[in-house]
Length: 140
Image (cartoon, rainbow, N blue to C red; front, side):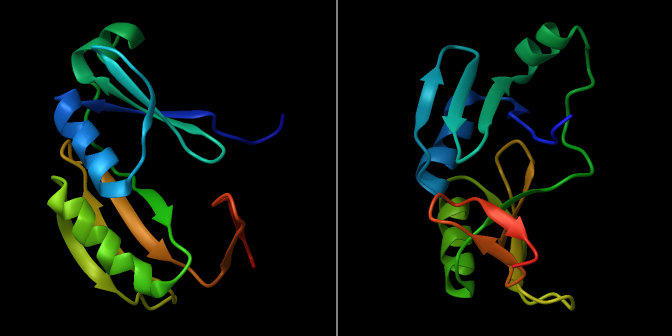
């Protein structure tokens, strides 16, 4: 089987608050939305934000949708793009948990929580090649 992820769905408390973070912060535009869910087309996958109660109903799992031990990453092309994007995300309702800095393994990164406490790493990694569409390949 070919390895890939098609859609990542995040449970959110309020669609409007979440949408502000993704639209004003990242500049992503919804490709579909209704009263329960918003879809954003990203290069090779779709990110959806789904009202937590409706997502739990959809999965038939009550009380299990919550932020966990994971981080989503948004890579940028240059180190100089990291801090300004983090500032935009914070202005759009996010919370900076780690200001941008250089980790011991190289690159430059910081962390921002979306309004529902989903962690986003904003990173520049010299070991990732990024094509014109924003797709990354490990081991540039």
